[in-house]
Amino acid sequence: MVPVLILLSCLGQPGAEASVQPTALELPKPHFHQQPGDPAWLVQTVQIHGHLGPVVVAGARFGMAGLRSVGAQGFFDVEVSCEGPFARPPQSCFLDGLQVGTGATLGKQSIHWKPADHVSVRVKNTRTGKTVELRPTARLLELVAFLRPPAKNAKTNEDDHEHKSEAAVEALSRKIAAMPDAEIVVVQ
Image 1: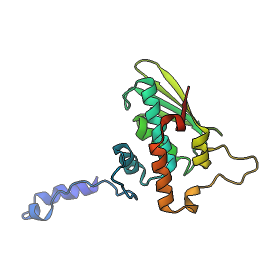
Image 2 (image 1 turned 90 degrees about the horizontal axis):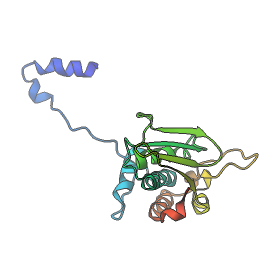
Image 3 (image 1 turned 90 degrees about the vertical axis):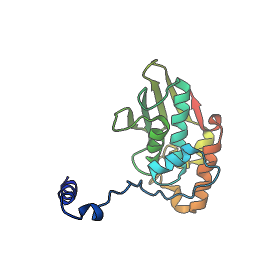
Image 4 (image 1 turned 45 degrees about the horizontal axis):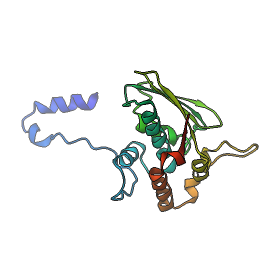
């Protein structure tokens, strides 16, 4: 609030118009090496999340598959509830992807998460009441190992990104982005 007051007080000063120029707001700059073939939804996902990673891409794919399955437009006709090991990154990146893929957001309180060992997402069309449940395929769990439930007595389910090059992480992310829905998600 203070910067606005200062700006407004300067506008009444002689010569202030020349020294105080409104600037266009700029979005934050994500860490991303965009490729010519990247779909628009992938670019939007990275803009929201900040980087290209396989878990955020998987979340976006789940969200889009859920919307299609219930015939929802997204944003205002959808409720999403999910369960999974999303307490911290990289697993929690899945939630950012779900928000991008469905338009359900924490601010609108149309997406909810509950801790669980297994990934499960329910998408509901609030206009029709149609609901589906989505679960990852064995193939997706193979590609994104840290979405699997932790093994008994395992220390932690750490971020696999740290041990792979940025190029390898982006390649895996693009692979998941391009895979058919049936290889990523089971819709029930």
